[in-house]
Figure 1: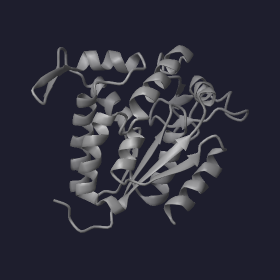
Figure 2: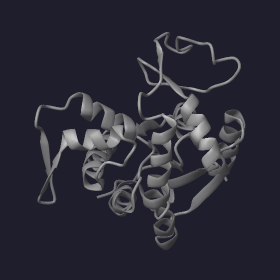
Figure 3: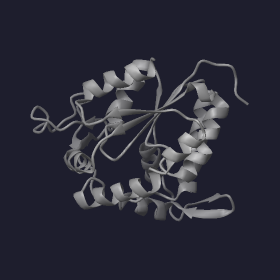
Figure 4: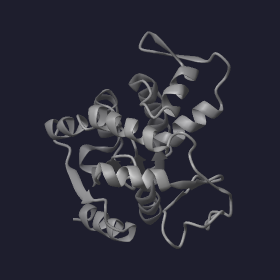
Length: 235
């Protein structure tokens, strides 16, 4: 049951490379939100994977190794597997009294139909704000193929004339890495296809269930995108 609280949930949606990670970090720091990134939850699960590990969900077993191989190929993991991990983490954070910023979740209609009702029950529909960062497929491929993250904290480092020669993260000093496989142009095309076929249908669900979606031009410089998001959610 939902407690009376003033906690909020911000959900950032958008194609691969739309800036979800960058804006998620900026907003979580500005508004004191727990930065809930599904990709990191999956990465953590795959790192701690036990040999032959399976998770039973709704009467069916999901092999963690198989889910990791899907993820590495740029495909979405099975929705029940992702939803199980996401719901578990959301309940834990709510018990801790945290406001949330969700980046990259929900990714499928299956997940949305289970995660949004949970968030509504815990936080209240009036406290859920959905941001859609809109970019073209061309921008998505370019951004992802030039993206690097830091080894320690996984900060996304934007590609520019000032950063293209950096070898260490300016925030924590760790080595800058490319996500091997995930950000290759061919893998990105697979990810875009998955996004179009499996994530875009969520917007019909949001409309049907009266969740307001705020559309933001994600092609602008990050600072402008950030200011536009702040203005939109504070209205």
